[in-house]
Image 1 (cartoon, rainbow, N blue to C red):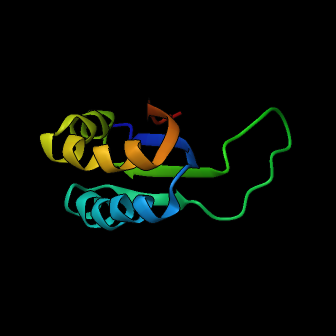
Image 2 (spheres, rainbow, N blue to C red):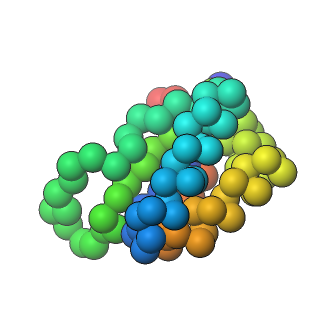
Image 3 (tube, rainbow, N blue to C red):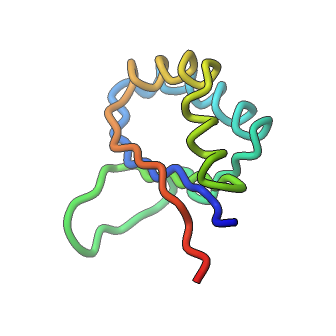
Length: 97
C-alpha cells in the first residue's frame, strides 16, 4: 500500500500566533500515525518559486492522510494555522514503483 503525504508550502504571517498551531500539530500527528519528514529548515529554490517554509508529513497510506486532514480535531486545530499563515496544501499518494 502506498504511503500518503501532506505537502505544504507556507508563508507564516504571524509567527507568535503560528506557535499555537505548532504546539497542537506535533502531538496530534504523532497520535495519528503522521511523521514529519520535512518541517521548515533550510531550503534553496533552484527553479520556479516557493514559499519560505516547506513541510512534508508522511502517513501509512493516502487514505490515512485524507482521514487525518478531514478529522474534526484537525479541522479545529487548523483554524490557528489559517489565522497565522497562508499555505498551499496538497495531499499526495506516494509512489510504489
